[in-house]
Amino acid sequence: MFDEPGFGRGEVPGDPALPLLHQVVYCSRAAEGIDDAAVAGIVASSRRHNPERGITGLLVYGSGVFFQWIEGPRARIAQLMEILHEDPRHHDIVSLSETEEVRERLFPAWDMEQVDAGDIRDVLEDALASAKDPANISALTRILDGLGDGSLDTLGRD
Image (tube, rainbow, N blue to C red; front, top):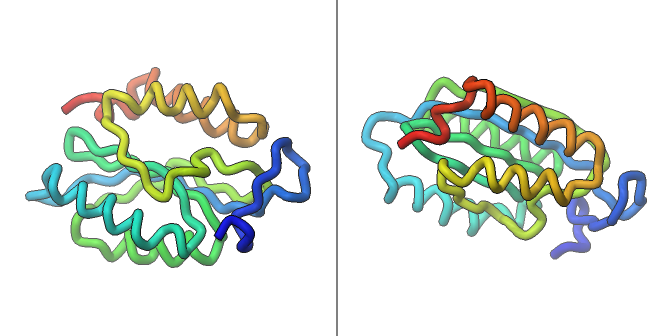
C-alpha cells in the first residue's frame, strides 16, 4: 500500500521519495442534530475508505464546528472535497489552507484520526515539533497562531 503513488516516505525536504501531496485544511459548521455518534460514524467511514485513496489526516469536532486536515494525491482530495461540499451533515465550509507540494506527510499513520477539541493544540504542536519541511512548519504555525489569536477558539470549547 505505501508503495503506491502518494505514499512515498522520505525523511527530508527535496528527498525524491517524498510524494507530491495536496493538503486542505478547512472548518465547517455541523448541521442540526450532529452528535458524538454521528462524528464516530464519519471517522469510521473515513478509516475504511481513506487508505485505498491515499488520504491521511485528522478531524476535530467541538462546539458544533468541524476542523479537518486532509492530505493526499490532488485528484483524490478534490473528489473528497466534492463529496464534503454535498454532505448534509455540515455547512459553511471555510478553507483555511490549501497547498500542493512535495513534502512529508504530517499524519502518515492516520487514515483519519479523531482528536478532541481540547487536544488540538497539543496534536498540532507535536506535528510542528516533528515536521522537517518548511511548508509544513509554516502551515502549522499559521494554524497555531489562529488558535492563539482567537480566530479558531471555538474549536477548544464544548
